[in-house]
Image (tube, rainbow, N blue to C red):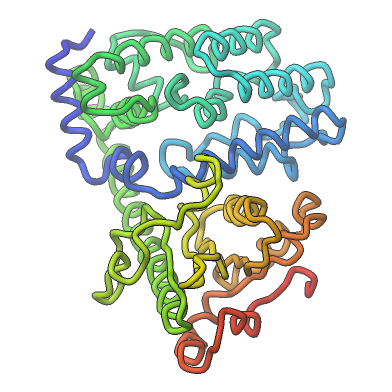
Length: 425
């Protein structure tokens, strides 16, 4: 067992590494903040389809695939989270697609976890799910539950388990529910210690990230030094190089995202509108222009619930009428992140405003046009007035016409000239 002083020193090293998952995922990626809402919605859709009998006999095309897609977008920690849910017909695993009893058990588990408010309730449901020993359905399910209850449930994968065994000198087994529940309990107990909590977070993802770095060989401790140096040296070097490349690519994507946001801010200001940028992006700047200097410090007060206000405040760009404060247009920029999540945030905004008449847009690269249109034509969006009226603007069109829109545009409706509607495809 690692000594408390050793653990706090290890945590400090973990946080100081700018390429650790603590900095690139836990505190450094807006996708993490945005994922929680869309994953909850996807879990709700999965439950509803199981209850109605419309959940198919395959992972592909199911709402569960949407949930796991949003989770795997969380970069390194969740890179392989979807694999456990792929339907493998020859092996008949995981046995929640063709086996109707197991499918309903899985749906009931998700329903109970979604409604749970206490740790004891979540742990009870995990024990219930593990009891029938559904073939192929192991503790990878915890990755879904983490996004429902991040302060109660830890993420889980091979690297995290390996890191746990190294740090706590244990021999817990992969794919074992009892092993996962032991691991979760220890993580929660250690994370609750004052010196650890002060350095990390109530959210168990921060501690799981520490274990991930140890288990993948990026963070050396006494229990893994010999193995890393003698057996895993080349693998560790490749992993470090791959991580560096991923971080560089993420920085490049963030830069492109920022550039598109800057154009939308510039156009909105030129049209005489007030502009609000996602609260986690206000620190950004583009070509020397500070977003904080060009945009509103916060949203005008509205009769919204806290959850809706938090969701709307994360929408990438909002244009508002200066006098009334009414929202004229809203934009979600999705270079590589979930189109589904972006649509949900725009839909939440629209449903929160009586007689909403603001324009809603997904802004994405040309290569994602088919994906955008496919999402907008999902039954849940297609049959909604909000979804059917939502527009798509390509990066190329926005870049091409930015100067013209700023110079010749009279009001926010000018964007309809470059936007495409799902009904056109």
